[in-house]
Image (cartoon, rainbow, N blue to C red; front, side, top):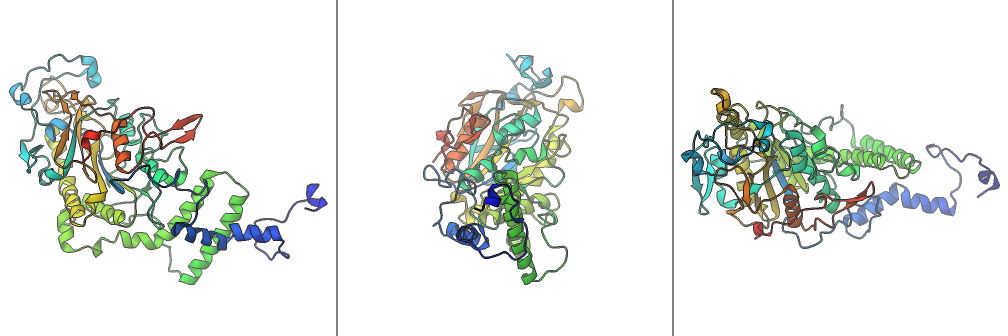
Length: 496
């Protein structure tokens, strides 16, 4: 280094794209390592499994599972608002016998808002379904047709009865905003199987986003590249993905090459800024997505029989059916985790929050998803994908077996929030098919047998994907953070 440089003389502008003088050995090696040629070489070596990525570029804490996985990918269907277990998957004949009586032994402090009405039997008839004899109500006749593929948890609990904190808890393991979603943890831990599509895709309800919005699929303190990428089930799946006007392949390649070089130099001046690095990676991914996404989301490539299977031609469920079919196509192309939302912001109109009239609310919401979800399961099984795909169907909490209020009228058909015991189901890789785990009391109010917490649920999902939930950690603010906080046990009873 010259004495002028040591005394503080300014070096040439690193952002200049004009000609440079003769390259020294260090400059040559630096350009080889960090220039476009080096980046291309590293990408090819990484693709072929011959390159050990540095920590800043790695997709996770190693990219390899801790033990042999039973599932390679996940599709989660989340019902925002609180599905009533006693009207769907938790048959309680005692409610029919005790209709109109009061729930015995209940403390009003255990009830959301302290509201206390009489016992109300299910608004939909229950029947035993399939060879497994699972009790499923007429609310979901199509899902009932695939009962033998389902693995029920009938003893889920939540630690809060408030919608937004409970939704955060179900998705991130914490009741506060600012923690990574399960899909982000999987992206961080296992990376993506596709170079051209994100590892974590979110398909919100077309009517509105849920309360808390992107906080439900945020990467929070994990590297920003692991956040969920929103695709839409209606219209153009990704906004502003296509160029505003036609562009030749040569001009497109030249633009990307120039942007890559400018971004590289800009980042070199600001080493350690994860948000900047993630933004650059997101733009690079977006460029590749311009080619990959239109093909992956082109539902016209599917047969008429497949469209009928999902129900895309039916007005009452077309949008959710398109989301399910698009999700299957994304999973086939290497997306690690797809999250489909049924229900948006708070209120019965856009979700499952049936305070006023369960029969109307739940029937309206169920018809939107029943055929598409059943079609998805049948399609995955027919294609052999269900063997290594985990399907999750859950909600933030259940609803009470008593009515919303003691007053007569519409509120007599509503149900309040119930975090003490509710039902969810999973299907696919590594699970006991046609199996039920745990139970609520005779009224469907509290989990009394083998209760499962959100941390237990998350630990089990990670286990199925080959991850030890205690070992998937990220150091943040002096704490080794993890999806399951300092709790959680794998529910081994669910495993085949």
